[in-house]
Length: 193
Image (cartoon, rainbow, N blue to C red):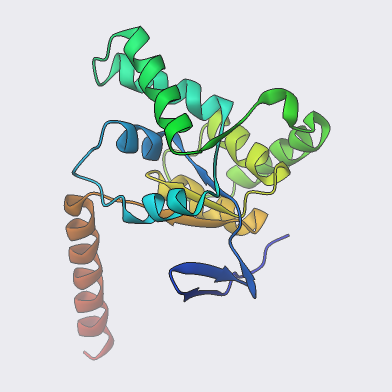
């Protein structure tokens, strides 16, 4: 299944292997940031796809989002539920319900992802819920996942041929750029000694 994705941009829409991205799935981190209007994250890409009307969320992501708003962002339970459903409805983000998914296909993909997870070098490893979201999105034809949890998703995305795009805070972006700069510096200094 593993294949390198060729990604190019055309008028803001990413083209993968000659085909435009037609269905975008969010993880709970992205959905929480959108609902809570989290200014730390650069939300331009998810908002772009929302305007295009091609966004989907799996029911498990909706449930996780409500939980995060309630337990970590201190929303009252009813407000967390109402704000989540209101945001999805107002922005025409479609909820993929459990009964809409071919369970046999999802379970097959889920089992192969469990085996693939053992090969991933990232620590901590993706949780079963991450694998469930990935398998469900694959069965439903989602061809791009936008996530705040990029390290968990990138290798699995390559395995399933789903493009994974991250959103990050400015602090994360600066840290990543500094790490790259340090790697480049030390790599070059060792290489030419």
